Image 1: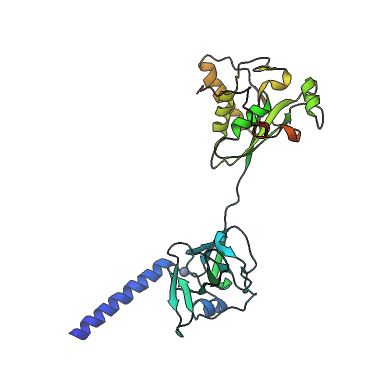
Image 2: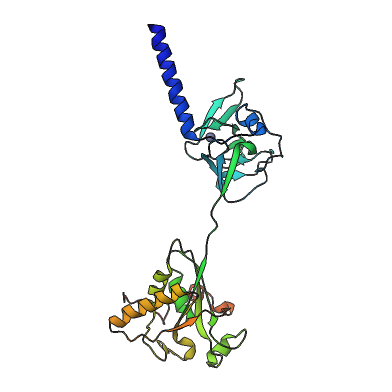
Length: 305
Ligand SMILES: [Zn+2]
């Protein structure tokens, strides 16, 4: 009876383990890979794919794809194997080697052999080195950042730049010129008002953090889109209100917002142009207010939506 209970328990355990393993959906391994991952061999030093490798991303278990380390914790220890001074929470299990001297590291999810861990070497602030076989790892590169650019003309670019630089998701703002005929215009050329350019800002942003519409709404709220002869005290064609759009979608967004403002009784004079060549302005115009510590005289936020 006792034996039967034991056998039942064992078979139940076996069934569970088999199910658990099936759920893990393990990747098939080559002979070389299983030699390290299953039989705990060590790859030759300086031979692995990820030894001299510094891309931005996450290292996964070759066998089960569990995330183990990020590139932020990787460092060059000179030992010949990829080295990390931290692992993702709960990703790694430590096991004392049979000889009781070294500490083996295995994937906490599937038990794949990864390498060994050493403490107290003083190589990094964290004072720990996860020494991992490249062959036990896969690498997933972080998705490259997609940048977009938006172009607005709303008077003096100093104040425009100042306001847009404060927006979350905006990566950078440059002051410059757009919309004229003259090639490589200088500030002097644009100031005369004869080159045809407007003072424009180039807003580089991360569309996953801020939308074009959010930027466009801000544009209409930090300048007066009804002023016909310039912006604030700055008069002249180079200070007129305009948006340079790069596609139909941007164009429709601006038209929609102008429609909303018109419905509120504002006689918007903002002109829409297709995007043209952007000429970055002279260095002293970039980050003008940040550099001088002055406060913009030309742009005030007014809630209009
Ligand atoms: Zn694993």
